[in-house]
Image (tube, rainbow, N blue to C red; front, side, top):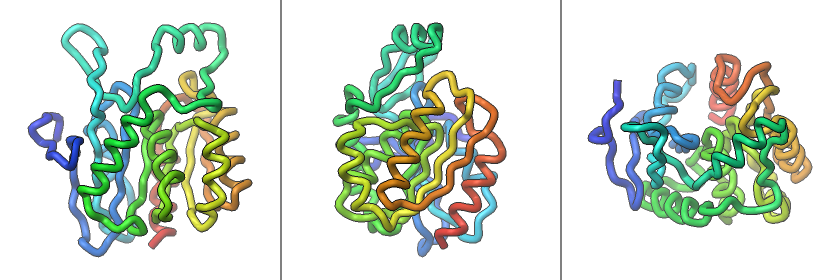
Length: 233
């Protein structure tokens, strides 16, 4: 089991965990969520059932986040945890839809430099992520002038709605995969559906999997990812 930062390699400004597959197969870049690390999503590639042996890149967040004494995680941009806990207590889930989260610009710049160093043609990249990693992947995908091979939004959220609504129609040939828990206490389900509506309304095609759970990646989502990746081949 990989769990040591010595297993990571440098790719541009970021550390990443890489899994090499078929050189002719697409590369999947999966950004982790807040407080996790490159190792958090790594097991996904071991349980998927796909026709191709994809290449995988799991980036390691550039921010170090203290979780508890002696333990820290990584992140792409800061989160006001006190405000989040208050929102959960009041059942008033945070909605980033009206703005770019603070620090997203730095995360985006780092991710672009990492992808440039990776050197994979944009049409052979499948970008995705979980939670704030999904927000970053979606933002990068929509902002780039080229169309990537795919986009996987796992428990993500709609941010910077005005900009995304303007950019999304330019990606009408892109097929996406999205999943979200109906009782997600971190990023509300309604916001995820709003993002799906924006993408579909802009001409993108995709599959949305909802499940009776929270902020997680359950078995039905793993199965859905397998179907989605096989459909791109």
